[in-house]
Image (tube, rainbow, N blue to C red; front, side, top):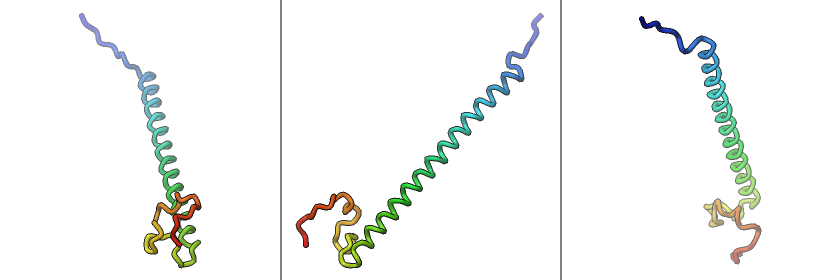
Length: 84
């Protein structure tokens, strides 16, 4: 005669469930932190670009509208490109 027994008891189920839940919460927290980091860096870049645009005082401040090169002005390292 065959008898059936539970091979997966309640204690093992709770342990596995807790482990999976902890893993998913950890992944969720890391994802939230990455999103916050990305938004912070983007906000800082926008702030820095707006400050760089204000530095010129409206007279060829480096924006794309004035022919200053746009977003690549930050990589000039202060060297002149010969235009005056």
